[in-house]
Length: 217
Ligand code: MHO
Image (cartoon, rainbow, N blue to C red; front, top):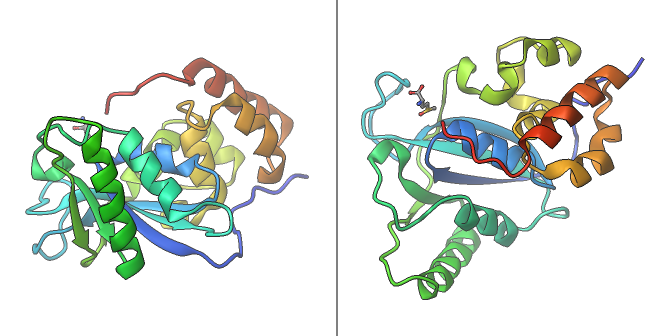
C-alpha cells in the first residue's frame, strides 16, 4: 500500500510573500521545487485576530517553508516577480509585499527590486517589510485548489483541518491540480509522493489540462 508523504523531515527556512489572492500564491509556490510546506494567512497590519471577512489592515500572504539545499531565496524571489504585475495598483488585501525574516533576505529582496525596476518604466508598487505577526487563514482557504477535489483529499487521507497546513503532499498537489509545476516535473517527482496508481493518473490529467493556464481567483 503506498503511503502519502505528509511529513518531510529536513531543516527548512521560512519566506513570506504577498502577490494578490493567496489561493493562487499557494498553488504557485506549492509546486515549486524545494518548497516543503505552505500555509496562507493574514499579516502586515495591526488588527488582532483578523478573519477573511474582517481583515482590517492586513494583506493575504503565504508562508513558505523551503529546503535551502533545494531552492534558494533568490529563486523564490524570481517566482515572486514572475507571478504578478508589481506595477499594478492594488487594495491592501491584495498588495504586493515581500516580508523578510532577516537581514540577508532583506538585502536580496532589495537587490531584486532594483533589478526589476530596470525592466519597466512604470513605478513598482511592491513593498519590502519586516515580518510581523502572521495569522493563519481559516482552514477552508488552506490548499484551496486541492480542497475542491474531495476525491483527492480522501486518496491522501486528509480532512479539512490543521494537517492540511503541515502536509507536504498537500502543498504539492495543490499546485499540480491547477497545472503549476508542469507535467515534466510532475512525472519526475510523483513517485516520491506515495500515491496509488489511480490518484497519480487523476492528478496527471489535471496537470496536462491546466498547464500554462492562468486562473483567476
Ligand atoms: N474572488 C474570491 C477571492 C478569494 S481570495 C482568497 C472570493 O471573493 O471568494 O481573496
